Image 1: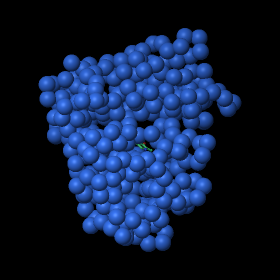
Image 2: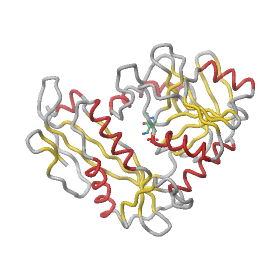
Image 3: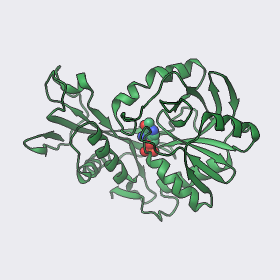
Image 4: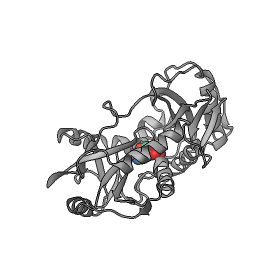
Length: 323
Ligand code: PMP
């Protein structure tokens, strides 16, 4: 679907997967107006295809657009693009129990121009790809590197938007984490470098027995849809939930005293992934016994059960997008 100032959203089309032609002066290539979303479609037991809270992705896509001075795609067009893509991909059969169809909507500025200003022409595209487990090893605890050298987002910046540049800015830290033998980076706040924010493509939860704590939305982390859903599921499962700041100091001390029982990360792609080991410039430690905790497993089972249609959808979170 294209957008320009005169016509608004126009020329929607569904076509075979192919390359995009862009002018070398297309503004996205120079000034980076590029946003995206990530959601999944799941084959349901009755054969229909449904997605988990796609309306929330549509809304976050509009919020990202506003932050990047881009036009907002109406939610109905966003959802209709998913329906139309699923209609042509409707013969897709999950190859394994947990396989889903990962959907990647994105928007870029296409106007030719060499001056820095919001473009007046944009292109919205949706592509899809079958997706299995995010980590090749399946659900095994990951190790994380606490980055104090690099930050992902600063106050007033673009951290709460699903903006392509945020991910580009994280690549060197991700490489550094790999050098340290870790799977993922944990981002800390830009100002004091001690408040835990989030991971690469995931939000973080800390489990203290029957209490779960997740960093509050300060404007510098992505408001994850999995995060907000787990806050509700956790309280339904009888857990106490808290959204507040968590420092690296608290993390290490509560772990050493045994108060902290589990840590996990969550997101659309990674679902729920336990964190087993932490490394930082001053040392390293295992979280509890370094394995997958019971709260992590219970929440994962509930969430995946809902998404794959094995648990009753009492929240109305599943939206059928192909009959
Ligand atoms: N943080 C970041 C930086 C992400 O890219 C993602 C994935 N969209 C998340 C958190 C988790 O968000 P969600 O649960 O909506 O997938």
